[in-house]
Image 1 (cartoon, rainbow, N blue to C red):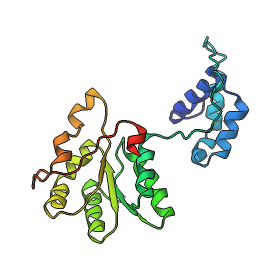
Image 2 (image 1 turned 180 degrees about the vertical axis):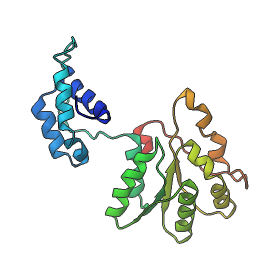
Image 3 (image 1 turned 180 degrees about the horizontal axis):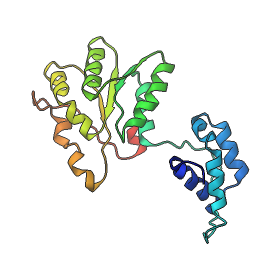
Length: 213
């Protein structure tokens, strides 16, 4: 339909806009004006193809109720809240390696620290990103890194180094909430105690946006 199977999610998005009866002109306007949707602009034919699918299948049309509250709202996920809060309180250096589901923190921090004249580095792996964060901290720069369960396991030696040498280190560990991934989850004990030095550390576990901020 679009010449590439890679566009199938965008086709589904176009179909969803018809099922929800979203005005086509309004959807196109948002895509054109929002800078974060620049890649979606190149896939407008796929969105249009999805809209045409609505007429080929017996989907019921679901109209969304108009908003009851007309006050503006900020819509963001927890990773964005963490990144913006860190930048607002003085984090000027971020070192990381992309891993789901923490990759959005890395993406947000790239914009946040650069806008404030800070340093952003995508390291070659989680071990290097943890080491860079320790180095920045030794130089007196407020820094952080972010990862998920498997990445935190790789940072174990660096966590022990920071703990034994009493070097401040901030790590955001975004857990994978699924039973099938239980083996990749990070034990709470690893977050609260370093394996080598067994020194306690401050471990915070936010579970909604306000606490993430």
